[in-house]
Length: 126
Image 1: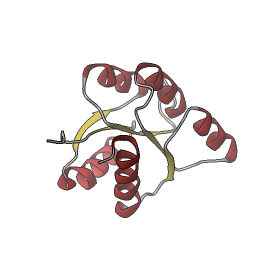
Image 2: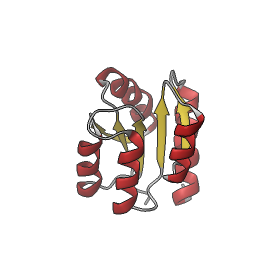
Image 3: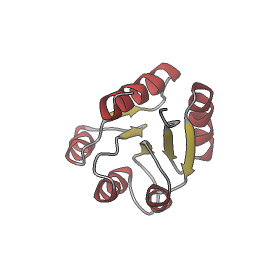
Image 4: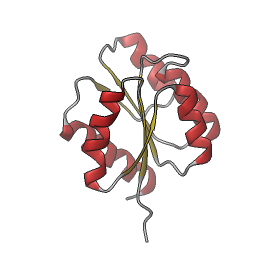
């Protein structure tokens, strides 16, 4: 039996996390929430997380810094970066940190769900 996929939603904007949760939970995903990168790292080390969806601009650690640290703990964990402002330098940094995909805010339901589904299928064969 396949485990219910768990997604860590990391963003300092509570409203955006709640919107993502409302998009994903009805589709069978279990969600965890973190308000910053340090909280995300704690959750990744404690819980069985299958994918991390994170904002670029956050306090304490940026999304890129968080992704780099997550990959030190769980190298193959797919990460999707979301940002309202994404320039080419940020995209290069994300690629160097082994991002699965980059989404630009505002995101649509279909963008989020198809990217999450693709990442889980590519990583775990689900």
